[in-house]
Length: 213
Image (cartoon, rainbow, N blue to C red; front, top):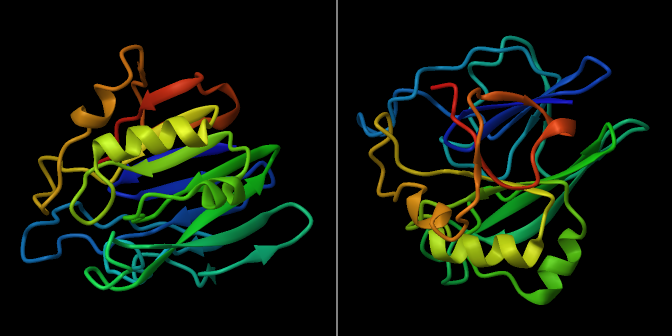
């Protein structure tokens, strides 16, 4: 399994059987100049959506017509299921309701993409997530949990590898923080040099992955 961090909360997963998943594809050059990631045109067999905001659900740059998975999908080589959480700490009233966090299992890897999770998860919700190899967690705050909250959740979920996403960058001036607050909780985190990596050979612990854009 090959994974690439495109930008914001968008990742691609290339499975060993040749199929491609794109998670939370964004609408580039949007939000009145505050979201200046370029379009990411690609082919995909599956577009996995955690919630319907334009920085997470835009299908217009996908060349073909993929299977769109907002809830669950299963075949003999791929399992995708959703866990519902709130987009904020106010029962979903501030930022538009719920987010369908995704658990993706394929090629012997179990991955959780938390989408725009904005609430502090209960022990029952963490138990529902289960054992995770790769955790993709938002850390930028305001629209989601912030760096301190994400660090606490990462420790409670205890994935083999945790990768932060959804934070401010030179291309994104939405009301977000950078990843520094989150990373400060992990003195020995690792950095990759490339946005694309083999899931099987990721280091353990917290790993900072540069985005493609």
